[in-house]
Length: 158
Ligand code: 4NP
Image (cartoon, rainbow, N blue to C red; front, top):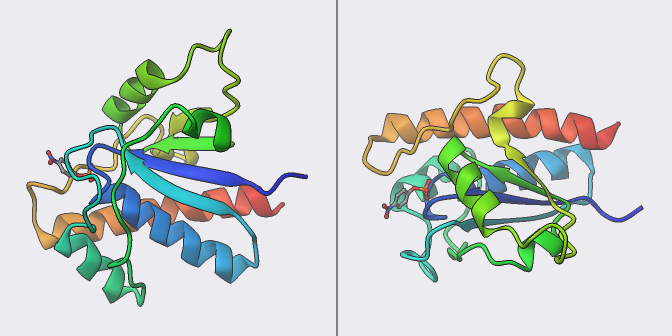
């Protein structure tokens, strides 16, 4: 069986999707699962930049160093390379579906869905964009992405 591969996508790839990436990396290690994991943004404004300092601080509170992560924009090849692509909010999901290579011509294999759809009772909901917010908003992002990736690890692990 191919190793599972997961890409998280938000808008800037400096706040939410790096935290989702970090949370899944930690949970995969804890569960002893080998998973290819990355994150990207639908936008390119922050490409090459490290995560937002508040995201770095939030990950550090959980013992994880994400200061070496660098933002990048999602690309067509991601839809072939990754088995699953999770959008952090419904707008990211709409944008991803617009960016996805045509399903008839492309060899897209990625399943594209909303991250919070993994969490019973949270289907259809966003991981709220914390960019214009406070430290507490980053803590709420951590809680959401951790809850979601635990569901994912349970699913991959069985
Ligand atoms: P992210 O947050 O999508 O969670 O990385 C944002 C980062 C940057 C911007 C918006 C959201 N921005 O407008 O630059």
